[in-house]
Each structure stands twice: as structure tokens, then as C-alpha cells.
Length: 277
Image 1 (cartoon, helix red, strand yellow):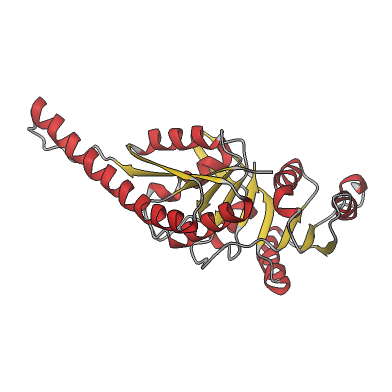
Image 2 (tube, rainbow, N blue to C red):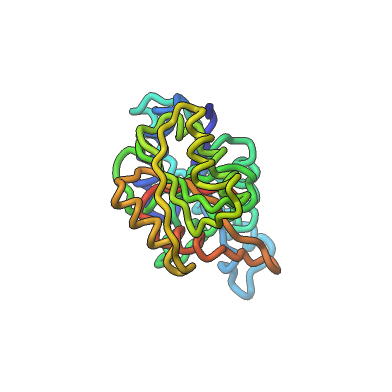
């Protein structure tokens, strides 16, 4: 059971896919939705000869503009949330990017699920970075909504990308509240090694059967470069509404390094995707 969702509302991107998806999930799960949006402040606004009073005034103006951008984004969300009749609250922040990420991550750690918008490579904004930071630092499941998504998000047909790993198992457990509501479940078994029978796709199917779920297994062998396209191909063929998978990656010298399949999925997802790290 999940009752407390967080949604990160971008202040520098189109937000309709995210707003529609997050609110529909809150409705179907009878959950409270906490919406947070950050207007990003910049320090690159100071004239060379600015004095102390001038600097303070310039920073205050920049903060007010950043906060206005966050409030404008939340106003769209608030209108739709009120119309849907869900319990919700909003938090607008003005902050430099690093501090913004820390604040949103801290909030995500105290919510059952965080809902974010898929990064959009063509846009240069920190709104593209925060979702990945939440995935790796929050300690909880993150639902990525594709920026091409339209309308409500209904997870009736779910695909589980399964490779027997710890992260896949974490994602599976985090997805149980969705799986118990699903009408059809497909376990997508990728390059399964026969020696790991205890964590095989068949074993996953037996595990989910104890919850009363009926599971179909799709097994495939693929080179690394073909794994993500193959998952999305199965998603299209089976009409999946949601993909569940582990979020692979690590931090090196303060640089976020995504695993290949995770990176490809975040860049090219066509279906809402629940990831856990």
C-alpha cells in the first residue's frame, strides 16, 4: 500500500504529461500528492563593478524571478489537483541547482514513491538532472513518465525486466502495489543463466502466483546494445502500460555514471517506467 507520493514538477519544461500521470496515480491509489518545483537561481548576473548593496538587490531580484517560475509551474498542477479532488500540497523553492537536488532528494526519502518526468536531452536544464539524482540517492522507487505521455497513467499491463540481479529484485518488490492491481503481467527474461534457477523467470512467476497473479514469461537473448530496444519492442507488442526494472549506475568523482541499459531507457522510453536502485 502506498499513500504518500512526491512529484517533482519542472519549472523549465512542459509538464502536462507529468501532471496528468501523477494525478491519475494519486486518484487510483487514494494517495496524498506532494508537489515540489524549483526555480533555479544563477550567480552569473553580477556586473563587475557591483557594490555590496547592489549585489544584495540583484540576488533578491534573481531569487524572486526563480520563485515565480516555480510557482507558475505549481499553479498548473494545483488547478488539476483541485479538479481531481485529491489531497495534495505544494512547495515552491528558489535555489541553486546543487542545493535544489539535495532538498528534493531529502523529501523523496520520506515518500512511498517519487514521480518524475523523463529527461529531455534537447533541453539544457537542471530539471533533466534531478530525476536521475533522485533515483540514485533517495533510496526509494522512482516512476519516470515519458515526456511524450498523454492522459492518465493506468498500469493495467505491466512488464518486469528481469535478470536475476539485486536491483531487479528491489524493483520487483517496490512494484508490488502496482502488480497486485494489474490485469496482465509479463516477465521479460533477459539473457537468463540456467545456473540461477532460484532466481529464474519461472521462479519469479511462481513467486507472483502466491499473490494471485497470472504471469506470462517472455525470454530473450540479446547483446547489450539490443536489450533496451528489445524491451520496448515487447512493450509495444504486449501493449504494456508500465515497465519495472532496476536502475543501474554509480557515482565516480561526483559524476553520475548510468548503466548502459538504464541510460538507454531513460533516453528513449516510450512507456512509463518504474526504477529502483
